[in-house]
Amino acid sequence: RVAGAAEQAGQADHGAAAHAVVAELREIGLGVDDALEELLPHRGINLLIDAVRTSGEGNDARGECKLRIADGDERGRDIFLRKNEDGRDVLIEATLAEHLALGAICVMQPDLAPGEIAFFSLISKFDLSREPRGGEGLISSVKRLRDKGRFRRFEGEVRGDGDEAIARA
Image (cartoon, rainbow, N blue to C red; front, side):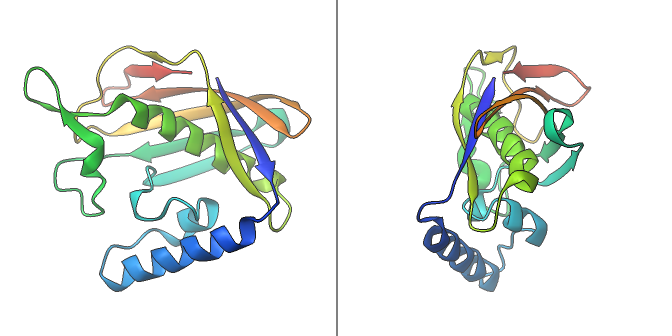
């Protein structure tokens, strides 16, 4: 499960600093999509989402995120690849958990007041069925389950090429 919360204290300076880093990266030709930067300003160049789509409200809120990282990734995200025992590039497993969490944060954005930032606090019951291959297209789907105060609970799944489930939380 993916759980998240919103926090207001002291985040304005952090957001401004993140925007400055993204601006510098654009100057050297390593851009981040403007819409994604607005949703996740703290992730900068290594943003682990290539595209996101959200729908619904409240406990019907859902999100779908896409990601593809191959050797030589133009944004340098190939640092998230490792060689498996067969010598093939595979995505570091923790990257899938981060991908799910970022999707949940995107779904939470409409609930935030100006100056608030969403973050995830824990991922439990993470189950990996196979290693995600380098260069494989991944789609993460998250669904909001319930709220408890300012905390939101989600469930999610990552699918690979061929629509095969790779991980669940």
